[in-house]
Length: 421
Ligand code: LLP
Image 1 (tube, helix red, strand yellow):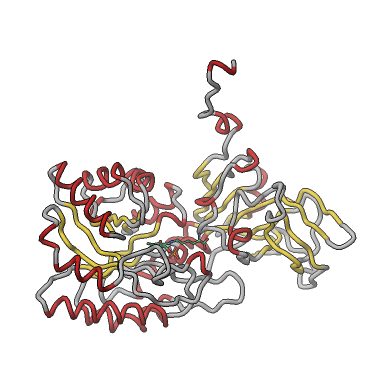
Image 2: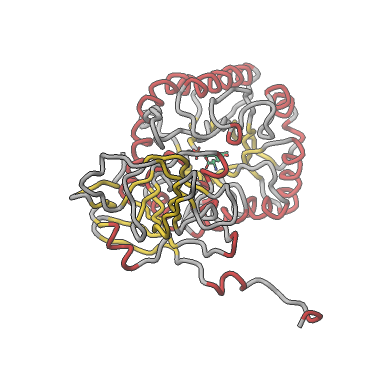
């Protein structure tokens, strides 16, 4: 469910007619629905209310400060993966006690900052990383809390690029190695072993792989308990899939019904780290049709957004629904197949291929749906294009929550050395 709906054939975001925003903000721009964002967060919290989990929104999906702030105000913690995300998480007002930090490549500097701020815990992905965190913590005289990220070796049934819980992936630590580390935990005198973590992949639409992974975790936890090794938290990661096209992903309720019994049995505090589930369908990318170009073999709809703004179709072959902001009478009638493409100098720069769309004209506006997650956060300045503005709607008002780049932004950090002057 989301708050992007037609009224009188005009696409609205909550109570704002999106065409009205295009009068004030130049395209392309991202548009977020505050109500949808919070609704998704609350759905998850409600589905798991019997165990009161800590939901740590995964900032990598969309780290706009207003998005993070909205969720933090609603009670969410944050899942971070870099020093930059730590910086933004704190700026968004997140308590360090609600921050968890994953990443296979944390630098010493990043670790130092996170130890100094006393985050809830690091999700540790290797033995050398664990050793470094211990050393840094000792150096600055503060104990650091850690959870071991386990690689449970399960197949999540998603795109290979976003599969993370198989032993061929770079993530996490296998059960045997983790067991040895935990047995030897006294060696790490500046670390508190607080928990275990898994994150098996992204855009997972069925509960099966989670059930399998969590069951494996549950038996591991039982094994630890037998040896009187106490663990406080189990972090089951993110990865919940959403609807882009015809998918029928599990709802939060269905998901919780499947996993809650196993989670409850562990007796541990539970953490969830969803990104896409919360923000994916809370955002769209609004773009304008620049040209219609017919070639002997193709009909191209050339729009003013490019793969630099939204890379998912180019990178993963991802499907995003495309809707006109203004629907015409015969909207049901789909026209010729078109390719919707951007202005970038690569043939991989497309949003749709051979798609039947309602008739569009030059100057029309289109909405690329389901662009709230991994949209702006993966945007770049490729081709010296300006990163788009981000706009948030709440009720009948809209707010610019990030300005569009300026040309000055493109050169601000370039330095021409003296010998070239
Ligand atoms: N926790 C960890 C440790 C993660 O690596 C991720 C995502 C999440 C949580 C959140 O996953 P989510 O709930 O959003 O599925 N760029 C790709 C998705 C990459 C996901 C990376 N890790 C895409 O556009 O599909």
